[in-house]
Amino acid sequence: MDRATGREVEPVLVDRATGAALSDLDIGFVAGSAATEPFRDRLADAAAAGGRAGAEPS
Image (tube, rainbow, N blue to C red; front, side):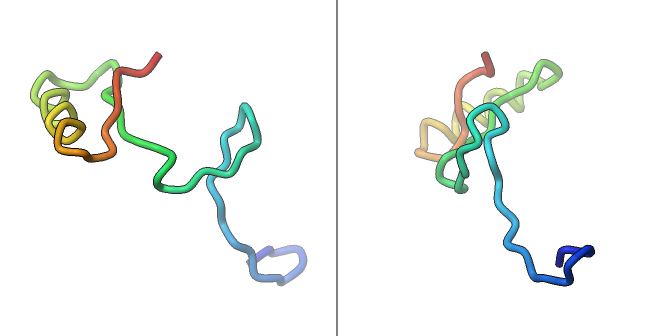
């Protein structure tokens, strides 16, 4: 709910750089700089199995 107007709002995830709305099918997980090797391995396994894990962040 918008506190100022009392109207119900629909939350959405938006790419800040482009303003494009994103769905859960548009995004994936990547290992951050502090990720452990076992975590990186799990993400790689998930990506190989068709999950939403991605490559290393650029």
